[in-house]
Image (cartoon, rainbow, N blue to C red):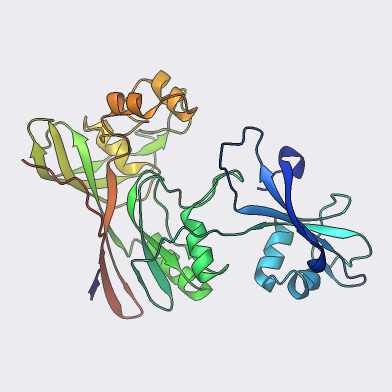
Length: 336
């Protein structure tokens, strides 16, 4: 036991930032219209002079130096075009000109796994870090570190929200990815979270309420609903701060619905401190989602500068070995 888009190129702006004539390609960054200061991106468009008579998938492996798996994936996802911006597909014989390859190139900021084996790795993600790019203008995500350290075959086994901190499991190869994701589907993992919520929670309870997309103005939100997907979360109070009237609790989700813990806690009057989406006026939520709320206003309205939810515990058995992982991050320490 261990404790430890496929959008068309015309939708983007391309900015030339370098070239390497000896390699026969030029590199471009995809730049959104409103480019923030100091902005950088993991998606790069590269241009390669073709080898006449070679099939595009063979060219991608021999010249571009992609793995066969990645080459076929990029062709399938329309990430390869010719010099006339026409999509190239598997089996196409290259005849003239050049091809353009849109590829994810990971960057590293030094985040290391908490633990790893030959089959998987475990990261202790900080709050504020997306686990993967949501749009091509996303800068740095956890997937950057995953691919930088372990290569294209490595994948996220599960996900947590950007502002949720804590444990994320990553597979290093296709076999591990298949086995671990299948284990998640049949709920062979025990996941535990800590949350800081409004008001005093006096007793342990099981929340059983269906979850469905919100019928309100904010389409990102979910809501409890009799017609929603079956969902259950067990919560247990750990400590109560009388001066702030906030409770630190443990939450164990038995199902994996979007925003499940946040929705369930808000539905019983215990909104998570710092949550900018649930339990608030939709006008504020809309302004927040459109980046019109500064940090001072957010803290004033929500109670914190981040969502106070932390994935602190993960337990499972893999290839006959039982693993119990605990986050090393400090979270929610309070005086009763």
